[in-house]
Structure formats: C-alpha cells, structure tokens
Image (cartoon, rainbow, N blue to C red; front, top):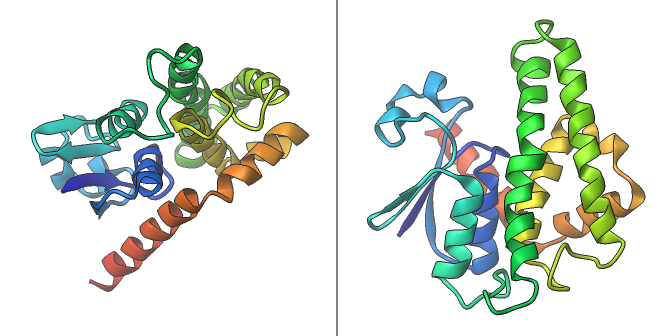
Length: 211
C-alpha cells in the first residue's frame, strides 16, 4: 500500500492528484501545516520535516514532482506519462519540473511573508509575486498552441504546473491570470482526479477532527 503524508493544498497535493488520476489505492496521512512544528513526531517519518513524504514498499521519497514522475512511470503504462521515444518527452520532463522549480518556489516566499511572517518583508513578497507572474508567461505561450502543456493531452506535467496554479489561487495571484491561463485552470479543476484529490483531503480532515 502506498502511503502519502499530506497537508491540505500543500505541495503534496501533486502526488495525491496523481494517485487519484491513476486510480491507485493509498493510505493518506493528513497533517497540520507546518508539520515539523505542529506535529513533531512527523520527523520520525521524514527527518527533513517537509511535505510530502511517500512510502511505497522500500521506496521513500520527499520531492513532489519526482513522486509524480515515479508514480506515472512505475505504475504505467499511463497516458499521464510520455515515453522516452516520444518527441514530446523532453517537453514533458521540462514542464513536470518547471511547475515546482520555477513556478512554486517564488510563491513559497510570498506565502511565508504574507501569511506566516506578515510585515517582515512585504516588499520581498511583492517582488516574488512579480517573479512568479513573469515566469507564468511561459505557460501562457504554451497554451497558445494547445489546451495542455505537451503531447496534445493531459499529462503529469499538467499536474505539476496545475499545483502551482492552485497555490496561486490561495495567494490571490490568480487575479492576474491571463484569459488562456484562467481557462486552463478551469480545465484542470474540472478533472475528476483533481476533484477526487480535493475530496480525499477534506474527508480525511473531517475524520482527523472527529478522532
């Protein structure tokens, strides 16, 4: 059984969404954010204290985009993966990691200084918000060619970038989405796998609160 340690709408939403898209059974461990502070026993699972953490037998992983790549290739064949002999393979890998390395990173600093340490670095938060939006233009250019980022279909790359858009919506950065990105975000939210992942974390949260 795959185990996933998750905080609602944190980076761990990527592997949760992928699990739902793949229809794989899993055990979800829901944690308060940040778990290293609010649930320190989590450090016994992941000494880094970061989210996500995933166990699949002897396999243990902590990087959200890498977990998605692992799931869609380890449990394939799947339309979520693009094979190495496909012309879109390089684009798929690039978008898969662009979602985390390029789009999510600046938003984590916006989250830190606008939510957890308000007033300490308002200018830095504004600067990183602008950074995120400037990088988002790359997504806008890709969507001028297709409804999805690569291979002319929904893939794990859209899960990775889609999480960055989910985080942007929480940070109110979605107000600056272009029409193409706003429409793409609506397509992503309409995915049954996305909706099942949101429902799974809410259900687990209700169980956690009642226990």
